Length: 143
Length: 174
Image 1 (cartoon, each protein chain N blue to C red):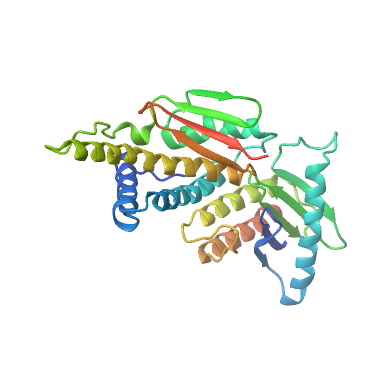
Image 2 (image 1 turned 45 degrees about the vertical axis):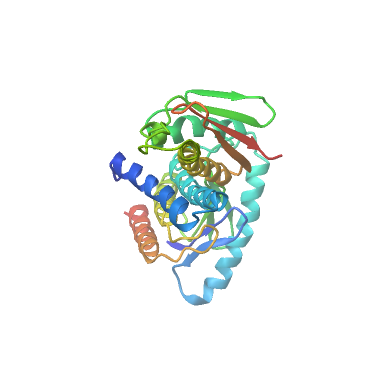
């Protein structure tokens, strides 16, 4: 199941971070998200020849830690989405689907004229949409 | 999923915005009005580029991003592409639209206001020439905001000498 999603801006400033487990883990999850930013930068700047093409938005599995898998997604506007999950067998297609819906929710949230670019996303609608997407991700991968 | 807005609403909104900034808020300071209108366009362009680059793979270089502006971005906004793109291969691009939609319905005839003496006619002509310029500040802001969001710092200016054809000059900052 998904434990944490995060949106990080192009200057590596956090725009939205939400964890879906008990509060004890939240510091560790923030640390994981922070470390994964380095991996994203490395993937973008040093493309492996055998890896996915340079232009893909979905970066795939960034790195596995002891309990978690971390997936990354980089938009055209250099905004990064990070997904931390404890599922052991997650299909890439499911994660791509998740990121696509998450991207749509993000675009709607920042099209709000009262949202200031670069500041945190405070929209409740966005938070609700994200929890809906997270819940349905859990269902589709176990179902 | 998409919502539709009638084009006349967009035209009315832009006209009212320019009129409010030029005639009420910054009545005697056209440079301030221009920079405010540019800033509004900047935020709009910033948000629109986020939406229109959603499904696309990432751009490899500046030319790709400019081509995106000319083709996809312009089609989403104006249902047509840029008619002509020129570059000097050193960071300057000229985007030419032969019939720019937002000024295509504006009257460009300066002698509209009844009987005028000679000085008034010149002042009216200057004022009438300013109106499309102010609209163009908004469009320049939109282009600038979109490019900044794609990571390209640039300055955008518009050349209104042959309305309704309009050229936008994009200078990429090194």
